Length: 287
Image (cartoon, rainbow, N blue to C red; front, side):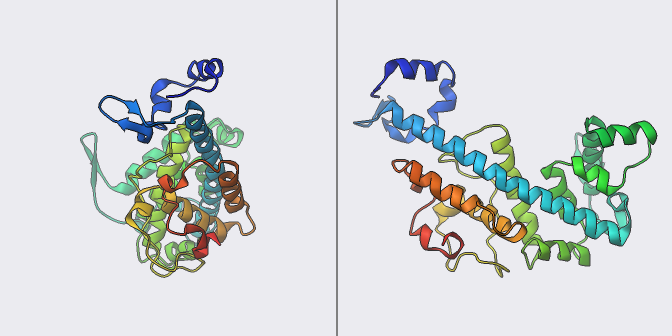
């Protein structure tokens, strides 16, 4: 590996751990056993990848926030107007079945409510602390408790609703989906992405464990032809999914423009390693 500025490199390596930065140079090795590098491998190029990845995560987190807030709001309004403020406790509007958690068998609904309650009990939001003080052991209405629910908890709550519930379909429609199961899949993938970003983990060249189902009948602009397998397993698909959902819930956002500008600012970063290949910029969602 070649260093243009060893003093600067020493400073960076004293503040960015070895195994954190290693993921950005893995493909630059000529031999994975001896860990020798390909000719003209510069440390500064690796740092460009690192900084590019960091800025991309910040842009995507902006989009995730928009999606999370929109989902929370629609679940509060639509379900509360139909079933009242404590709808999340009503087992009749949720699917049946059981799961085993740490040796205890319970319904997915009860497990999600337990997670939701934990988040409520540890919240330090003023309105939550006020509720706990004024109404001890009294369940909070959805418009309170869901405001402190995590993206993962919201996703599980939505997925657990009865498939035949018209309100479940209404939420999907307002989020840009004709099929509620597609929204559930996308929410799981976005939650997975959120957790990676929240832990400041690497997106660069990562194979995504969770990926959204491809839209069969999109309400909005999407892809006009099937994606390549590599585009689906890298972050290209999930970033495109995030962009699609932002288009539905906050038209006029600047997420896409920020991503495109980031590509311009880092022209030497090989974005094809993220799945951005095969004339991706000419696909409808990215035009």
